[in-house]
Image 1 (cartoon, rainbow, N blue to C red):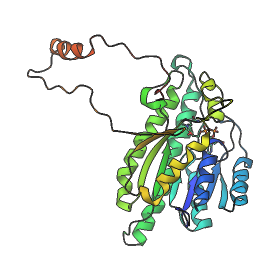
Image 2 (cartoon, protein in one colour):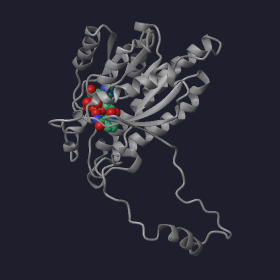
Image 3 (cartoon, protein in one colour):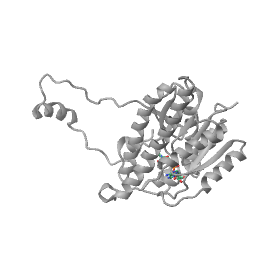
Length: 306
Ligand SMILES: NC(=O)c1ccc[n+]([C@@H]2O[C@H](COP(=O)([O-])OP(=O)(O)OC[C@H]3O[C@@H](n4cnc5c(N)ncnc54)[C@H](O)[C@@H]3O)[C@@H](O)[C@H]2O)c1
């Protein structure tokens, strides 16, 4: 018996990289998996049905159940068709893993409109379209059963790039911040169905991280533990999709290597109630005192590893 026997999952952007290993992992635990992918290049250009079909073949060769759903997650109608594929082929939809995306990095001062729009579209609108149509299906299912709790898991993919901001990725960081707050809002809304919504923050060696200024961080080591093998991230997605995570909702889980971190909601670094109404002079005393001696933001790569 697998923990996901009888469950139906969609994984978007599952033709390679993190989505591929997540689809394989869900299938290994018994889920029937709809493998979505548009088959783009690393900057979102072109399209091909082949990557998704190849992953379906891998899942079937390992004894699992899968079908492919070619399509653009950020296209409203295509997203609806991907959801319908799960229901029509496997009879239900329980687990929605949003993962598809690409990056088009650049400094703000050099970024053009298309770089901004395309990255916001694929990540933020892509997550919204898939979550929206999944929740539409769950709403109908819940109504038809007279409000019986259903088995539902929304799993979104953000990045620690959004938490601290990232030089050269303002579009990507903004999209991932949007995904986080979209998913936290969805977590509150899907409670009424008995479903959950969470966010994973992975770091892995994939096409996306094999180029760019930080590519060498992700290099496969000649010996020893391979921290950035994408396979390390997949079990966290399967666990969130599983029955023992039914009380886990509205959380951010960061995973790479053998490390997993659960982030607490933001807490104030200063919490001060003044005796007087605020004036610039009063703020200078309170905030000026708080920030005295602190350095401006550092130009570092996201969050450090421990
Ligand atoms: N690799 C990392 O370290 C890392 C870190 C943080 C977040 N992420 C996120 O993980 C996710 C997967 O990234 P990856 O590193 O595996 O990249 P990847 O390039 O290997 O895979 C992304 C997949 O998404 C597909 N895709 C692109 N646009 C699509 C669209 N409109 N509709 C459907 N499919 C589409 C591509 O064809 C590709 O197969 C992304 O959301 C990425 O932002 C990755």
